[in-house]
Picture 1 (spheres, rainbow, N blue to C red):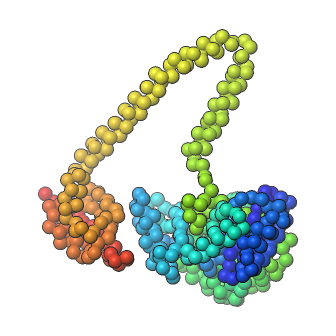
Picture 2: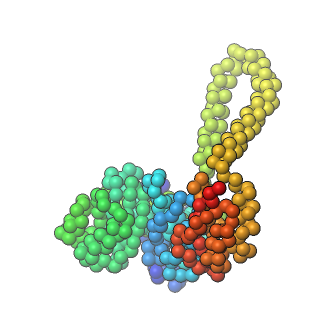
Picture 3: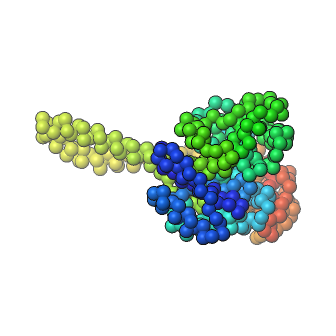
Length: 441
């Protein structure tokens, strides 16, 4: 096992987890009031952990996690729409918020379900300052209970499962669908009956009717596993199906310490690129894109094949290889010219196809956009504009959204202008979404 380390941040408590190459787990409590940065650096150095980056996991109580339903809208404005919706649920000022989001898998023709997470900027800054004092760089800042997925087998059998992890007198509920974290909650469930009620409430909100398993871990596992109330849920109740190497670590952790220890272990073993990563993008480790990886593999394969070919033929066909290389170099400019010409032809075909499509649908985009610019007042602007054969949808902000309907109705382009969602006020503007039909001619 690769040595790993992670820092679990809770309200008023810091726990460092270090996993050695032999699979031994050490959990160390740091005093947050006594120079915790120096403590962190000292503990890591004493255990030979010389890595420059360290994962940080935030306790679920420090993070707001929601699953939002969003319309299927592309472009850079989608991230702004997600943040705008998230601002309605956070209990702190939006300008003091650090957030991230990830799209949950779902039906292609249904609304997008987006998993979002947010914490106060001061919480994130506290974590970054602590790592800076310890002379470490952050690898990721995740939601600690979401990292519990790392402790399971790579392929999880149940299609949908609920993981109830108990620690410090409360329970973190993690909802897994097809092996991915779909949502989470932190509930003050002290008894099995209270836990059952909280799980049933959340399943209704998620619209899950086919949950197959409930996993119990952390503090008081045996008390909850043996409670008859849990079996009223109607699905299998057991401990989580840990990976074999994780099971060995869990068995060596005292039962009274498993709640915090398992969370810290999950943070240490978590991915460098979790689905909800509150670390600013500028500070995240660089990640090669799929195209770059494919290019690197292709370059490596090409080099290996070339070296093998040259090694097999260098003694027998040296002159032939030299002449062939010269011919390739001679034809290379012509090949590149042909490739450039093919690329230009493909681009022009796409342009012609797009123009024909627009003409066939009779959507005169440019004249409409020019007139729309004149119709909108100076204090109004659009975040998104969707043009279809049936009509047009506008999303944006204005000083007074209701005053937009009359000029749009009077235009030679549109009729039946109406709002499709309630108008909301944010940052001195009214956020609106409206739709109109094309005027019949």
